[in-house]
Length: 340
Image 1: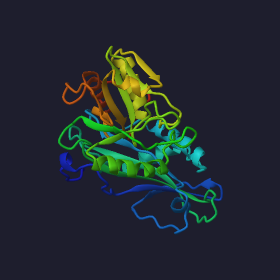
Image 2: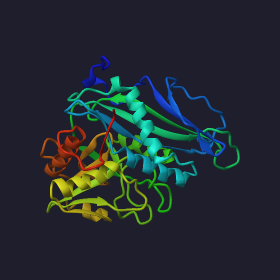
Image 3: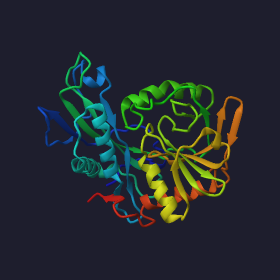
C-alpha cells in the first residue's frame, strides 16, 4: 500500500525510506551485501572518504507507469558509469549485474514509497561508494562500502517549469586530463562556491567553458548542455572533460529516432551560442531544464522559450522522453527495467 503522502507537494529533498542496500569490500573482494533498515554509517575519522575524497555516486529514478508497473530507467548505464568512475579514483568496481540487482532490491523493498502515476513525483535512487578504512599517507583505502538508498521526490520545478538564467563562470569546472568525465564527489564539491556565488548574483546556474582555451562550451556544475540550432539540428558539446549524461544520451536518441531530427555531438565554441535558437540542461532530476538566457559580462544571449517556458523542440524532446519513462510511449529495447 502506498505511503500516505501529499505526493504533489513533497519537494525535492532527502526523505529516508524503509530499506537501503549495503555491501562491503574487504581483503580484495565484495561480500554478498543485502538490505538493512539502518540509515546511519559509522566509520573511522581517518577513513579515505574523509581524508582524500575517495567517493563516487550515481543518480537515477524509479517510476510508476501508466499501466501501474514500477520501472527504472536505464540502470545498466549508471552501473557502467560508476565502474568507469571507480577505475579513475582507484575504487574497487562493483559488478554491473550486481549493481542493477542492488538497485532493484532497494526499489522493491521500498515499493510503497514509489509515487503513484500522474502525481509528478518519482523515487530518486542514490547508489554511492566510499573508502571506509583509515588512511593517513596519500593512498587509496583498503576497504570500501557500496550503498544504495532511495528517497521520494516531487517535481524538480516547484511551481512549474521556468526558463533559467545562467552566467558564464570565471571558474574552471575540470582540467583537460582531470576527473570531469567521471561522477566523482570532488567534482561537485568544487562547484559549490561558484553556484552559491551565482545564486547570490541572481543566476540559476553557471556555464563552464573548457579550462584549456576558455572558448568552448562544456557543462554546468551538474548537467550537460543541449542546444537546438535555427535550422532544427540538436547539438550537444563533445569533450573529454564533461560527464557522459545518461539523460543527454537518451535525448539524442529520441531526437534522431523518434522526432527525425538531425543530431550532432561536437565541439561548440561559445561564439556559436548566440546563434542557437534553443538551449536546455540535461539531467536526471528534471530531464531538461530550459535556459532562457546566458550572460557573459554585459553580453546577454536569449533563447526561444515560447512553448510553455521551453523552446518548441526542447518541449517535444521533454514530452517524448518522459512519455517513454512513464510508459505512454514504447521504449527502445533495454531502456526500461521492470521491478517484479
